[in-house]
Image 1 (spheres, rainbow, N blue to C red):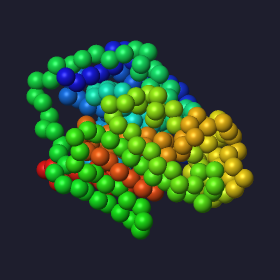
Image 2 (tube, rainbow, N blue to C red):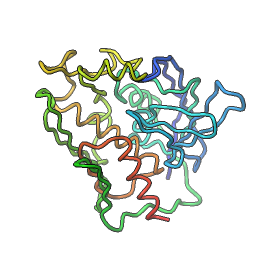
Image 3 (tube, helix red, strand yellow):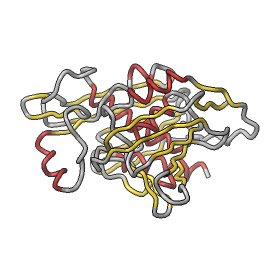
Image 4 (cartoon, helix red, strand yellow):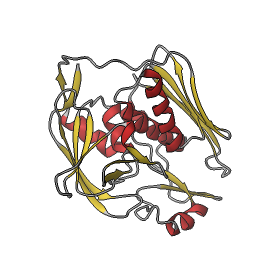
Length: 275
């Protein structure tokens, strides 16, 4: 069985990097159609599939594109859909960036839970992705890996010089509650990097209501939702990026100090080895 939403859900908010407000409607979709975006503000309503092949940028977020149309910062919404078991969804958006909302996937997950899912019988079962042997992608001391395992698990490690974050590790089994354990974890940033990122044209929509900010003396806008909220958010990003595979292989996905770029490299390697 596959699943789609029982009813449409919608949210409006500001994009993290663009600072532009967009409106998103997530609607039920046919069995086998997968998750895909539709730019309803553009002529001909271009469709952008939520697939690895559509990734065209990974600078501090994941961006998908097809032709001239693109949509940025898709990872939190896609993580919410995949984490809640939504296989098929039509995502209509009237701009180029998914709204950040509160910086987590919590609002998306609450909306999905409120409308519920509909089961969809599958006629042509997709060929499952298989991890036959460990796959590793690394850059300096950062890495991502997929290791054969009986269950799908995501484990992540981060290491920051600021003492309020420091070294954190967390592991999430997909059979556990994504809604409670991962979805509420908010995006975070370092105080000393904010000015540079803004001058680079990034995080125009970031503020203390939609992102945690950490300085040398601690968190600027506590309290945290979890003691290890930063590393849980990295798992949220990883789930969103790997959801571009369509479905998760049974594997232990392990990452350390990784990035959207490394996440996508791993996803592409999995596809390459499966074809």
